[in-house]
Image (cartoon, rainbow, N blue to C red; front, side, top):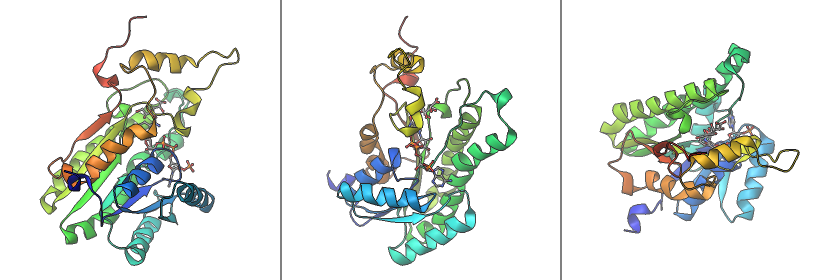
Length: 264
Ligand code: NAP
Ligand code: GCO
């Protein structure tokens, strides 16, 4: 059974993984035996990531690449294949969010979020698929969201992108399953990372952020998720244990999607 969850001999690319969820997934994959490569949008972030991985005892290679830039992505994948080898596991983790009411959001801002959160997973998946097809195996894991299923105020661009990412996941699964490539999503609930820090900030009077209190009431486990909560599900979807799981979004949300919410 251990072998079923082993990633020994595999090469994993995790995008946008200098910190946050991507960092935790890369760490878990390393501990499961994989060789890790990651990218981030600039050298400063890559350097910070390399230092953090070093402190965590994780041996990685880092690449500077803006995942929305198709030429840069193709160049990075080519470099990885030369430096390390064919990518067996891709985690499309890089993402942004802009919390702005739709009526106040510019079309350019909307496009930017969709570009990073939806167009980029397409670009990176398209870059790694040919070698996976030749190899006759591959794993693509897309970071979806509660917003792949639910809406909420101020996140129209993000929800549109993450809803689209769920369907891109299903489409890659449909188109490339015949080559023994599995494409699935991970849908984290609300995880304590820099991306959600604004939703957890203490108020001037020291009280909890209203959203923080709201979220606890919407989560059966009555807590925010941590990046550690995502490690096991991520290893499962990258390993042989999920070789017949395809087109699925695995929600790791403490039960949010199953729950109407605590009575006030
Ligand atoms: P995060 O803390 O904001 O980290 C995202 C990473 O992606 C950052 O390193 C960021 O770099 C990088 N990135 C952004 N745009 C990029 C680009 N164009 N090219 C390359 N790298 C880029 O996010 P997180 O909370 O770890 O979330 C990771 C993923 O999980 C995202 O897709 C997010 O939507 C998703 N997710 C998060 C939660 C949550 O509660 N945290 C829940 C569900 C889903 P910069 O520092 O320059 O921005
Ligand atoms: C928000 C949050 C969420 C989380 C996550 C939930 O403002 O609602 O940022 O969108 O990031 O995607 O799954």
